[in-house]
Image (cartoon, rainbow, N blue to C red; front, side, top):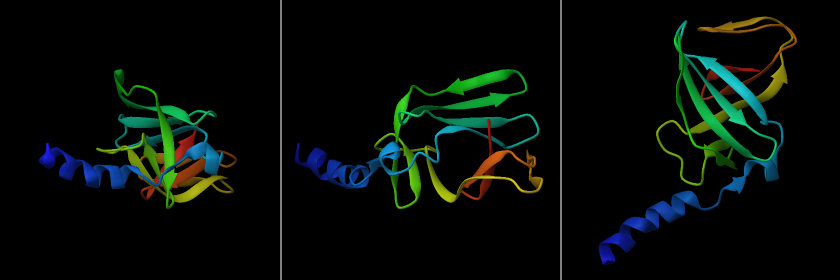
Length: 127
């Protein structure tokens, strides 16, 4: 029992201190798409109520989706759930904005007038 308590302390400290994303900003609400290859991409969905899902796609369509959870924020990093692991957290490098010129970055293309944000150094196009 003592071992369980000692192991749970770092987990609780890591999970604490985050605020619900919608309590801090509504700027990130929307769906954000990022290509990892020409055929593979994932979509981050952040609903207006702060809930959301993550979805992964390939040339055949949807390959994986997560259960709906709440998004949190702390120190300019968004977390998918209170304790986010395995690619379920993102550093916000640039908040959503409108492209003034066409942006081509890796496999992602953002056209003039489209919304985009930069998370973990990667461009995400607003859907």
